Length: 409
Length: 155
Image (cartoon, rainbow over all chains, first blue to last red):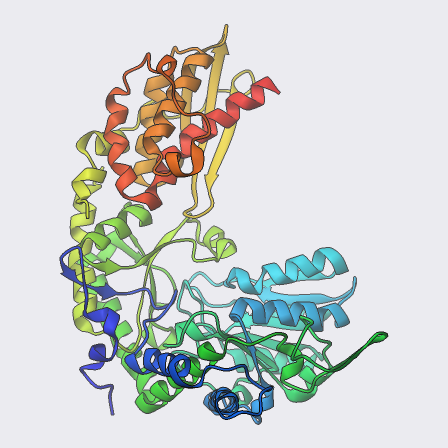
């Protein structure tokens, strides 16, 4: 089985032209495009069943609640969670990490503790810990990288000394590296630490099973997996979430409020203060249905083939002139290609590519510690998803040379 | 939509390929100031020697895209031998040229008649950057850094 060859036609945005060229969208690691079915599902919600959830007894309020809770159940199944109550809706993966740090970290971390992260983390899995560390005085420790862009786990036993929480990405948003989460989780558990996983780049692209990963907590975001912006997920084991104090306070997250205090609601509502982004949740549910209809194994195979093709043609064509950061073998990585071409600055490269309708990201990709490790200020990043094909890669390959000519010194 | 030729004019590419006044002066006695563009990681380091309120020499180091590097190079050529007051005026003029929002949000110091003793000359080539709003910060990085450096002198 492979993905349908006309998949692009499901994504209305991809039918347009930019600067006179058919758009070539290669920035899905930043945000994916949305299929018709997601856009229409959200429209349908607003046009027919828009009402606040978990409140009204009237028909459309019940339908809205039902649609939202169905989406929660779909997400639980999608990642192998044992219960829909373990799916907490947040604004994005960043908020999910802030929830973990503030709630679990606030309760469990003190001066002699350590949180172990890595040199390839997104700022979302760095800064919340740093903010809390400034208050609580625990250490934020870093797993270093090997020269070929893997986590250097040779010293993991030593690094785990005193660690209460390991929080690592399953796939780097800059290098594409797929990390051995199960191996790290097993070691973390052997010293009594918890394992939190940044699934922002992993969940949209590979079959995900939280039990197989050995994770205790998983953060990901909707807009990178064909869903809308403004909706993210925190998954956690129920007993762990149950033991954590509330994060944001307000409506929905309480069972009772008195002058002398409040009683928090049950999972997952305990962590969902205020009116949730109902349309976005339902839209994300439609995105999950869409991905399920493709099959996540097929999605991974498609991207593996395309990544392999991209690595091959880029290296064949440009050889010494191009550096592609991260593992050289496609099987060890996802479809994220951070490129340095000759000495063309990433900003200039993306500007020239834009002129040909090609969308790539230039910058530090919210991973400045990693940029420092790589010794670069920025990279140009092309990232792939279900709708990309070899013609997109070919357009990228063809467009590098003119950029090189323009900026040749 | 503007073409790339509006952005990457030949004189800009020339300054990018052959940047003027590259290097660092010993500091002290020279003044030193650094600027960063957190969005793209560009950085500029300026060292300049003053005598009687006149910039005797200004050197530039750092790294960044063609627009930020060319703008810094052009700036270095434009400010050598100018008084601080003249440099401030030139900077105001340059930033006004780079501003797409000056009327809507009110320019910090709109240039007056009094502010037009200089021809922008080569710097006019950077005008095309305004058509590419995300690149304006690249073009103004070195100028803002110089302003910061001059402000530090007066503290």
